[in-house]
Image 1 (cartoon, rainbow, N blue to C red):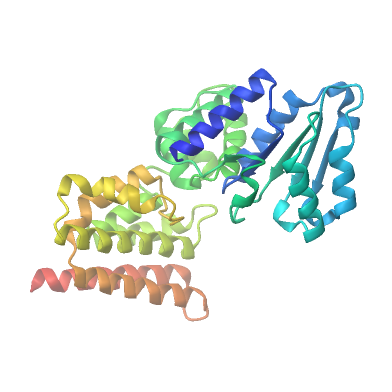
Image 2 (image 1 turned 90 degrees about the vertical axis):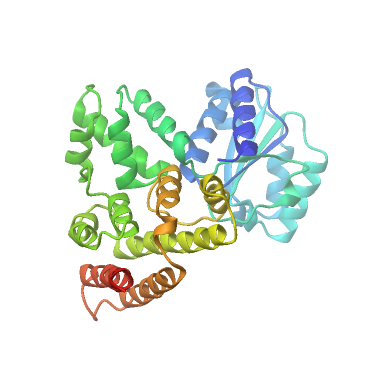
Length: 353
C-alpha cells in the first residue's frame, strides 16, 4: 500500500474515532472487503442506531435518476444531526444523475454525509476528487498483510503464529475477503487456542514446503526435479488453478528477464531488489506469494539465468497458457509439468554446453 493510501486510511480512522467527517468520501481501490469493513465502521460512528432507518440510504448508481438522487441529497436528517447517503457503483450513474451529483458536491448540504463506493476494477474518477475525500483501499502486501491477519485473528479472539501466517498467505494470497473466511474457520477449529501451522495444514489444506512459493523457488533455482515433485501438491490446494500457477511462473520469469536486462545495463546488485519493488508497484501482477518474498527470491535468482534461457521459459509458459484453455489436449498437471520440463531442459543444455 502506498504512503498516500496509508495517510488516507489514517485520516479516515481519526474521523471515525472523533465523529467528525467531511461532506463526502470516495472509497476506491482493489480491496472490496476492506472497503466494506471501513463502511461498517463509518456508519456505526456517523449514524445513530435509534434513527438509522430514517437517516441512512444505501443505493446503487445505476438505479438512480437525477430527481431521485437530488431528493436523497437534499432531505434533512430526522431527529439526528446528520443523514448518510451511500452510493455504490457511482460510475454507473447516468448523465443526469451525475450532473446532480456534481452540483451537490459543489455546494453540499452541511447535515448530509455522502459516501461513494467504487468497486474493485473501477477506474479512479479524478473528477470527483475536488468534492469528495478519496480513500484508497489497495490490496495489502508484505508486512502490512501480515499485520492485518494478526489484527483480524485477534478480533476473532485468537492469536496466530508468524509461521501459520506465512503458510496461510501461501495458500490464500493477499485477498482480505478470502483470508477472513479462512481465519473464521481456523478460529472455530482451534476454539481459542493459537492458530499454528498444523491448524492451517488441517483446515486450509497446505503444508510447509509444498506451497506455490516453493514451486516458484524450485523453478527459479533450476531444480527441475523438485519442481516436478511439487506440481501435484500445489494444484491440489484449494482455490489454486493451473492458470494461476502458470501466471505466477510467467510473472517470475518476466521479472527475472527484466532484472537481468537491468543488471546487464549496469544496475548494481544491491539496488536490484528495490528496482523489483518499484516494478511491482501499480502493476497488478500476480506473483503467487507476498511481494516481499517474491522480490527477495528474484534478487537471488536473476544472475542464474541468461537472456536466452528466460526468453525460452517465457515462450514455454505462453504455450502452456494456451494449452490450459483447451484441456482436451492433456490434463492440467501434464501441461504445467511439461512447461517446467521445457524450462529445465533449456537450462540443462546450456549447463552441458
